[in-house]
Length: 271
Image (cartoon, rainbow, N blue to C red; front, top):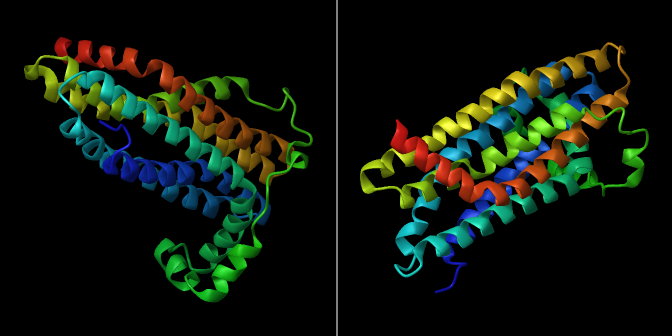
């Protein structure tokens, strides 16, 4: 039986788009600093992050349905391979986001200005800008990544602790749903429901870590750049740190998928 089924393709496209959105959200702070509207930029960032977090709730029933299509013979291995494909797609989504990063810095700079003029209404922004003229302007924003973008970024400007923390958080987010569904297959039926529901706890912990260690640092850094207390290069270094560590986190997710599933299975029995 083929690994890449119609459902896998649909889920892969969904993950690709959502992961790109989540990766590109990190460019909003740079855009906000450029146009000196950092508060509005943070509002746009929050909107994009909420969309990506909400997608996790949609992902769970979609990926769970793959179990019904799996052959009874060697079912665990079959599902594992499918889930590894989905994780690989997540890595590709991050890479696509990285390639589009310079383009969306320009696009979000325009969007932030328009959002400020629209009195903070995201819906009004999309309605008013969804026309032929605006689409032409978006096309002119296209930029390919260049090595010149990295000019001035050194090991000193890169927040190393944030890099490590975000690798861990990204890995957990990537396999949170997948490991809980896999765990539901390796525990007795009485504990399967508990294992499935554990994805909310896993992603919740990752969200708390993100809120405590990542977001405040970024907000303070953006404010300091706006007040000219910190060099702009540190904000660029932060963005590079976040997107590169996010990509590495999706690679680490491949390594911890099965160990995490067995941990969830143990947790489901313990509670």
